[in-house]
Image (cartoon, rainbow, N blue to C red):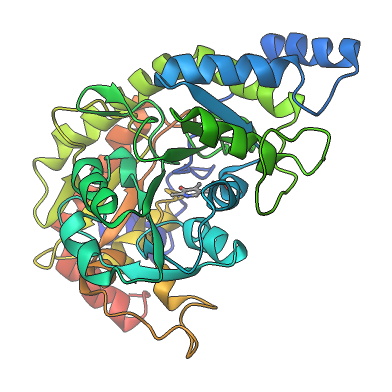
Length: 401
Ligand SMILES: *Cc1c(COP(=O)(O)O)cnc(C)c1O
């Protein structure tokens, strides 16, 4: 079906254009036979946890893939961030963006640190040294940058700033596996980096994550913090946890690594269709990855500009009702959700973050999306933009004609 008049929109009562929701998350899966074979091995060995052969293989392959000395797998990226804070022996305050997934900040709070929110750059959507510098004081022990949408978070500027203040710099790279900075894979920046293998990310370990570093001593600290058990102690650390990845997770992640390039290429193809079609859109702009770098195209980010005939939330509803499950990452900003948006954490003044929270939409990409889906999503957006004013007026009247 194509959209010819307003009554064709699911928002105004028509059948949704897609019977099954199109997600933003990637959900790439390995071929069933390969998964079955990998699991057969786990059952045969009866070895399920505690750094089994698959976890060790994954660590080796990740380190190669990311061009780092150490990759250390853990249960998920949230735990990885908690492990990071103890391995780095952080105390007091850590500078974080509020424009990120909640886990970035929640992990710091679980680690007993005080997150200090910093606004982001309106173009890159990440922290930079100019924004961070005024927030540093004697209680600050680290800066946690996020490579949002896979774009490196000012590693040069922040690196110089943190070195001059003698504080730690580390990165949440949950968006960035397969992305580069100055042509080199993200993974070796700052003191350490943290990746996520959640099913919604482009490398799917059915939950999972890792920490990467080029620092041997720090790697030993990470390995010690990751395992609560005293029998595996490499160096003294302040506190430990169970962050061990299971063999089941490693089996998934290894199979995912085999097809990572393929999946990235597939996403790039989908992204290119969006890009071509977006050139005709007024008031909507695709946020494009840094041109000189490789992107994993984990996200297709749309910015709804002030002069668009449709407001962001109305466009979101129009897509949503057709079963195009676009997402509003990240709304609200983390500085506005509990416990951070309370008296104990006076809500920081973050005008750029607030503006981005109100204007961005992520469009479907990944395993469940075909070229044809993207063309049709773009047809839908074309139609909605063309009839923006009429849609807005009818929506305000409450839908029914
Ligand atoms: C997904 C994500 C996380 C959390 O990863 P998990 O592996 O699910 O714990 C953290 N930070 C960012 C930026 C993310 O996108």
